[in-house]
Length: 110
Length: 115
Image (tube, rainbow over all chains, first blue to last red; front, top):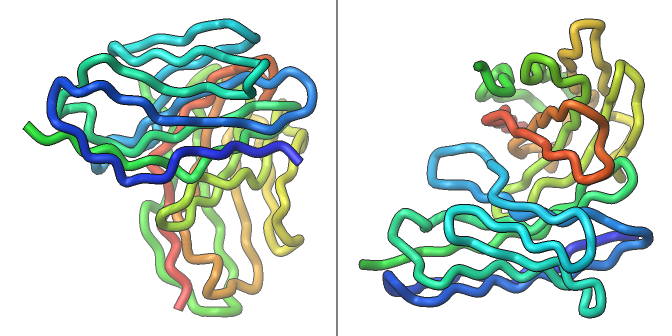
């Protein structure tokens, strides 16, 4: 069935380091792909999305490209800040369902 | 503008009891979906309602049911509660149904503890 596999955490980085969180998916048809973020004490909120192959979603310095050939949607940021500390969820929308990964906890230290 | 609102925020129930969780979508949104998030895991899809009809159902037992009202608010009902039902229950709304990459907007959730 449809599913999302997300890089295990937790991830700890120093401020200004490069971030990659891997996400791969399995889906029939043509899914849309999302990254949601959950900051401490807050609810899930959309970070970025891509609705078709080769689309690049971007927001707040984060980017992810929808790669159909590798069934991936890896999240990247060139220089992380302490304020990026949160849990990141990769998600897939296909048909009338959403599928979420298990989440990757990121801690950025000054 | 108000976001997605859920109630109650926290509740404790005993095994075998019934629980009703409520959700009000963002104004103008016609679709509501429900998710169960166990600690340390990602949200698991339970139901989707669009225009008051069930449009999608995840892999949950029949003890879980939901409905959407004419004002697009929604209720999630869980019967015969089990300890394993303890989780954060999230409601999300979107303007249209869960397809074509429509963004869903989450509420803060209802924390259910079953003892």
